[in-house]
Image (cartoon, rainbow, N blue to C red; front, side):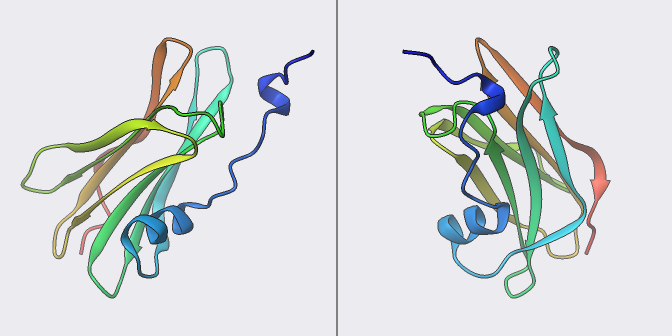
Length: 133
């Protein structure tokens, strides 16, 4: 029996907006500068991390979507830092994604996402303040 190579692996059926809505309800929109691809040193795209915003609640949601081992429970993490606070993370072994939300009314945010690829965590994000308001 042949196994699918990562290039032919199943794609993630969820969008960042769906992931945030599934976990926290409401309607989520992408924001400027709110997407980073997560790539391993060997060039494999292992995931994507998104910063989303809910204008009705003033909350930000970080969604890390897996591109490897989709459908298998493996390590994935989402992190956010709101201006004036420290980094907070949600992580675990999930089949498709991990999310975290925080209120950031009148504050700026940074975001981070990590995916376990083999035995290494690979990550990406924005580590400067943005999406202020």
